[in-house]
Image (tube, rainbow, N blue to C red):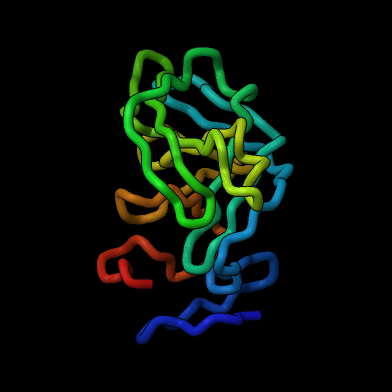
Length: 171
């Protein structure tokens, strides 16, 4: 299924039955609804719980999951100053994430006015799994994507290698 050229020296893992390869994801990325049960925990408290999420699939990245703002615990997301721009999704805003007495500064982000292809993300936010106590997909613990810049959600059904590790910036 791979349509793009792989970076020099990258050898993708062949997915087993029921697995997806990040090298089969498209570029530009694709947005799709997901009915997986998503749970986010911070400070020992469930701060988000949803079965109405969206996932973004992009070559070399594990999926990113976006949770409707209405499925976050009240007060869990507090807007903060600063922004960044994704060439595909548009301008991002950031949130400090609060739960159970803990705070993850700039631990979440969203796209209040996304590009048309990502319009469904307008009222959603995603988190950096590395900054949370736990993120789960259908009861399976998420492993964070490597690298401080990325917020992908790795589970055993996703194979790579994935962008984010040292030496992968140019992928």
